[in-house]
Each structure stands twice: as structure tokens, then as C-alpha cells.
Image (cartoon, rainbow, N blue to C red):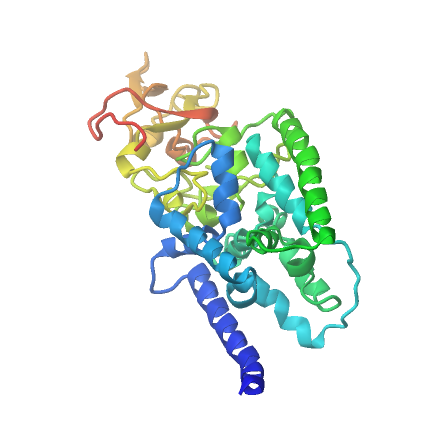
Length: 409
């Protein structure tokens, strides 16, 4: 009976793994389920949840979104890497070439422990630099293909998947056995009697992570930023916090209905490949006033979940008119495009001496949504609207007709 179960068990395990992989792909690409279901995959990772919480210096995720990660930890207390061997969709992908692998040991170094502790100690000082190596956020990055939002920069942190899959044809499951920080976390979480050799290795990984994680994270937090800072998505509290806790899963980029969110192509290592708003990407690329979908899918709280009313009160940038480029100011042509598309009544039209209305933006009412820049028809000197990002977004205090004053919930 025991021999029969041993023969049957691998078939059962592969059936479960392939089912979970198909389900994960379904949630990733979309279907007759909520688009917010894409958040489920990265939310399963206790590494992302706890590292982001450390970097935030606060517990910010609701209980309902904390439970999946806690459930994975409970499984680890029971069977350590059960999640890796039965559930993890990326682990299943890496396991597919096992039967045809050459079984060569081309990468003998086990670095998963160093990566884990480096990330965790970096999170303690606010910058978990290697958090994007979490396998579930890596799997979610594949959604950029299904949603047609893939770009070269989006795959800079995502090159690991095709590379590791290729190397698996030489060394079976190289990522899972040698590099995965989540797998290491699940492996060491269960208290059990360990040999002196294992304990010595664990101490070495811990001390190396401490010695490198803290100073390197502090170094990159102090690195000069790009000359052009990003326009942050709504829900952020600061560029530093966003750079620290965004795991580059690009769920927000994939779900954005106006396609204003893109992957950043410049900046220091801390802010490289972050989602940012690009109002010149295509027609209609601006932050829609009645949309908060990006915040609803963020698994780490890098984009805090704001209600529509709260989101409409958050100021992420300030627009201003470049008068030398403006059709009304410089060319004396009637143009009301920016005023017509502003959803926050932040543009006043003042009649000039020639009777042509000229736009002036009220900086206190402007939220930085970019609608005015996106629709600006000026071409002679480029767009006539300049958007100045705020590195620390704030809540607007000027009352308006549409919403009442309120803060973060």
C-alpha cells in the first residue's frame, strides 16, 4: 500500500501544481472574475508582506489581505516547503524541464539565505533593495504580456524568469534550490533540530545580510536622484516610501484603464523601474478622476488604498501654463481645451486685451492628474502645460463642489 501511494503521490502533486498554475495564469491574464484578483498572487508571499511592513514602519494591510501570507507561514510550520513543491506557480514553471534537464551543476552557490537576510535588513532601514526577487511578484510581472503593457524596462527586473527557466534545462530548478528568498524563509521558519553545519551556515547568512543589507540600503537611499523626478501614482506617501515598498509586480500598470502608468526608465537604483505617470504616452493618458483601481490591486501598500473621495483630494503634482507655448497666450488663438478637461475646476480663464480667454492654473486646486497636459493641442514649442511632481504627495485642503475634506482612512 505504501509503495502504491509513493507511485501515485507524484501524479497527484503534478495534477495539483498544474491546476494551481492554470488558475494563477487565469487570475493574471483575466477573465470572468474581478481584475483585482491579480493581487491574490503577490499577497500570498509572507516575504513581501513583512519586508514591506518593516520598510513602512507600520502595519498597513487589512486583516483580509494579511491572512493569505499568514496561511502560507502556517503551511511552512507544518511542512516547510510544501508551498514551494505543491502551490508556487513559478516553482511549477521551473520544474517543468526537470525530466529533460542535463542535470549539470553549473551554479553550485546557494545564495537564497544571503538574499533573504540582505532584503530583510535593508527593509529595517527603509529600503529592501532585493524585494523584487520575491517569486510571486516575479510571476505577476508576466501579466504585462497578457495586458499588452510589456516594455523593455518592465522586464529589467523580470529577466530572471526566462533566464532561470533556460538554466533549468541544465541544472534542475536552480532558482528554487539556490536563489529563492521566499523558499529559504519557508525552510527556516520551522524550528527543528539542526546540525552544527547547518547552524553555522545560517549564522553566516544572517551576519552577511546584516553587514551588507543595512549599509548598502542606507547608501542607495542617499544616492542622488534623476534630474527629472517621477509623477507618482495616487496613493503614495513619498518617493522614498514608494521606492522602498513597491515590488515591481506592475499590477497597477496592467490595470490602469487610461494607460497613464508606465515603467520608469531612469533614476537611481532605488527608484529604477518604478511605475510612474506619463501623460504623453497616448491620447487619453491621464489620471482619471473617478478611478482608484491601481490602489486596489497593490499587494504591499506601496499604493495605499484610498476611497474615490480621498483620492480626489490627493495632490501628486502641480500643473502650470507655459505661456510662450500656449495658443491663447502666445498665438492669441481661442483654446479652451485645458479648462474643458479639468475635473477639479483648477483653471481660470482670464480675458486678455484682445478678448481671447487665457488660462491660469490655481496651484492649490490642481491635483496633478495631467488631463490638461494630455489634451493640450500646442505643438510649436511642445505642450503648453508643465507638470511639476511632488516628491511627497499631500491632501488638498481647498474645498470644492464635488468632495468634502477628509484625510487618509
